[in-house]
Image (cartoon, rainbow, N blue to C red; front, side):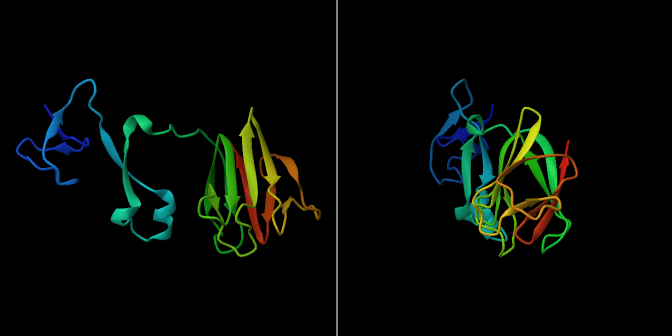
Length: 167
């Protein structure tokens, strides 16, 4: 029967002190025992090449949010990130240069919170979030406020062009 420390870390049967939290005592598995899993904080991890001990945290498996369904992609066709693809998930996907955006574009012409791409009821909508340089669809010369997207549309955000692919 597995043995866990009082914080839920799994321990070998011969261990009396948990190597993770340096505490004595343990709990056995049962109805109320929580199992843990190590996750990396995405914001801190994006700033560091390798996760540091302060960038890691332990969360309960029961507290993890289920991943949203994959519904499409954006592919950068120019700029520093040319060739990179970005997954679009069900619901709202934020696009910008801010580290906490769902899709982070590294370009000085992209606002921190530049645009939002939402998938709902089988339709995709691109909304500009009052960005400095605007959001453009296909070959239009006027910026958009909110437009429905269709497979193979070209989206220009600042100086970056992305191709939209729907599943």
